[in-house]
Length: 297
Image 1: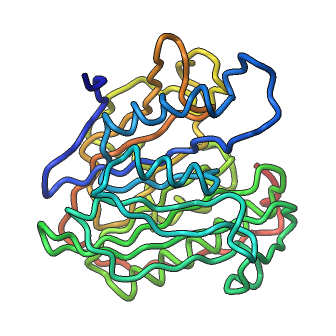
Image 2: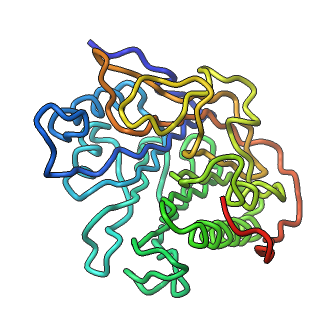
């Protein structure tokens, strides 16, 4: 028996995109803790098996968790990405995709640092290594292009988050300039609310739009996306996002606060959006730079 889906599998030309911080496995936890991976991994599997996103940007996935998510999604799914450290270990920010629908044409992982091509590098004030994974796809059903970015911003350093936002925006602008007809989507746990300088930097000039804001239909209340395994909270802060470029229409969106016998699969709620490629709206996108007075979230 399949669990009820918030959205579930979609058909062309629609694409379902999900961002989901699945919460890294922590080995030293008290018995009965809702954070225990062994206790919640089957809940992650139930949620993903029901939703079947076309693209999933995941965060905090250790190597065994990446394999588990791939298995939960099914044999038709592939993924790209590697660990944050130079050796490729530790957390991944993988992009999973349905290979029946999307053909991968290129992918890249960059460090969120002053030396993005030096794998495992860090700077900008973050003690934890952070990355962005990008993947370029051709839609096998429509022939359209999809350019996806998935990231996880630092949880402590406001300067790292703000500079990472500048970096992501520059990547998006470059991608749009190179392929102006392509749909662009950014998924991620940004550790920043809609009131933050990070959010304003990413969405302020129109290069990226918040799918929750521009969706034609919202399928759920605005749940807080970081629940910490607590009950759903209406009107809570959103720190996990599906952001879209100028050639994308958002048909619907939702924050999936599913509970299984009162239990949550992760300390974050996944955010999902149904996207459609829209008629090209040509624009010139220029990244801004942080001002001296724009200091904190």
